[in-house]
Amino acid sequence: MRLPIVIQGGMGVAISHWPLAKTVSSLGQLGVVSGIGIDMILCCRLSDGDSEGHVRRAMGHFPFPDVAERIIEEYFCATGLPEDATSKLPALWTATPAINRTQLGVLAGFVEVFLAKEGHGNPVGINLLEKAQLANLSVLYGAMLAGVDVVIVGAGVPMRFPGIIDRLTLHEDVSYPLDVRGASDGQEAHIELWPNEVFPGVSDRVGELRRPMFLPIVSSNALASALVKRANGRIDGFVVEYPVAGGHNAPPRGRATYNDAGEPIYSDKDNVDLDKLKAMGLPFWLAGGFGRPGRLKEAIDRGAAGVQVGTPFAYCDESGMDPDLRQRVLDDVRSGNVQVCTDAKASPTGFPFKVVQLEGTASDPRNRAGRERVCDLGMLRQIYAKNDGSLGYRCPGEPVSAFEQKGGDPVDTEGVVCLCNCLGATAGYPRHRKNGYVEMPLVTAGDMLVEIGCFLPDGATHYSAEDVLRAILDSTEPTARERAEAA
Image 1 (tube, rainbow, N blue to C red):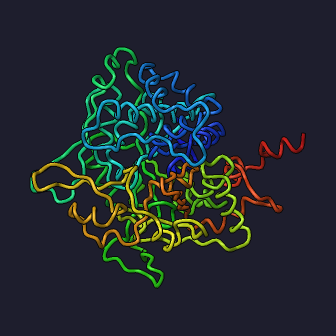
Image 2: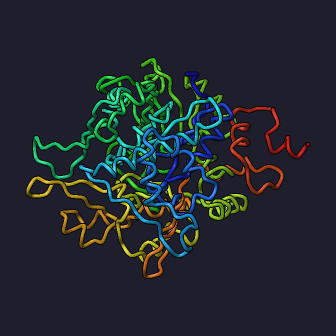
Image 3: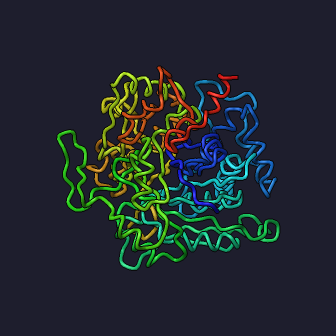
């Protein structure tokens, strides 16, 4: 596979959805779909009526039509749900999911990648969060069934992913170790996927799959070196993410310090030594602030194969962000009133999370305090060991009393946002509560958000993914929009 120069970041819940990834890949770079929460998004799209038929068309290509038909029957609503209704939720993931639950996760991964690859022959990637451990095997396998070309994993140490990818190409059983809070010495827990049990006869029906490239996201030389030395399979390269990137950031190295606004302070210790990284002999892409015009050349001069770009794509026309929300942020950028803060407490994962300060969203602590605490999507739940040795599940975003009863420290709940619900709302899928409350969005972006006005020349109020690529690649070719206007 030809290495891309630009990798489009895999962002949020359905921000990097298949239309964005398809557009970027069609233009010759690497489009990437987000793998987080896409089973929930699949259910929402079906419940909303799938008006253009894209989801059901992709499901029609799934190797096991009986599974696709069952899920359509369970979730599809031809007329769409009433505006104040909420789509049916699938069961929360556990370490021992039912076969039907696993099938839904696999199908969701398949649909998103199939649609992103449809109609062109260029590579497509998927981005997974290591911390969303319970869903990853199923979504990964579904993406591979659809022919995904690149697997990118961040927010953790994905040491076991290369070997799992190798085994899944042969439809062999795989197992992933789970992070269990309070586990005793020697106590281990895994989530497993048995392809031929979940889909009887899949090995014969589908045949051997093509192995995608594996690119872990790293923020330190130590992690990159450890992955090369200790991973159970081949590492094909790295995405090197700096702390100015959007979404989750790695915590600062060493003892944490904070500025007056409560943001973690990063230092030179948090920068990757690119000379040491180059010595490993693997390609790497720089991420975090490299979406500015002119920075691609800088990255290549420093030995990179290219750049990964998130924020400019998150606010382009093809992004999955709710259009009204996206336009409000762009208007703030144009007026010079936009601000991004690194929130040390917002994410249930404990990782710092970039938050755009925007009225009417969960960026306002008062709005967070007014939300009824509930964890009904559970993508980022913590797994913990009960006294009897069995596994339990808790989330700092659930009611404080429930979290504390499960052995959690109530301090960990302070300032926490339900990222699952908030990010779903950001993509236009807010959940409606029986008491009339509608989940509020939480918008994320990298620190370079203040600079994306460079993609809005001559008074423009919006821009396309092609505009982004043209500016980053310093192309003099006219965009599709300019060609259309000239015609």
